[in-house]
Length: 74
Ligand SMILES: [Zn+2]
Image (cartoon, rainbow, N blue to C red; front, side, top):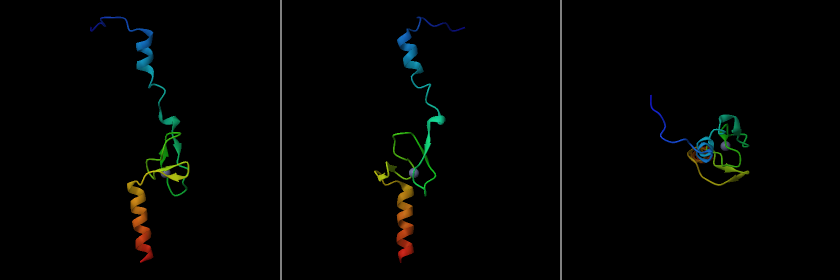
C-alpha cells in the first residue's frame, strides 16, 4: 500500500478542499426569456453572452439569431 511521506498540513487540506463546494446546485438560469442557458451567479451567460441585462459578448447563438433576423427582413 502506498503511504504518504508527510502528514498534510491543515493549510494543504484547506487548499485541496477549496473547490469541494462547487456543484451544479449553485447554477442559476439565464434571465433572458429566449435563452434556456444556465450560468454561474455573478457571471455572464455562456449561451447568450448576457450579463445583468447587457450584451457583453457576441456568442455563436447570438450570431445565428442575428443572421436569422436579417434573413427574415429580406
Ligand atoms: Zn442566456
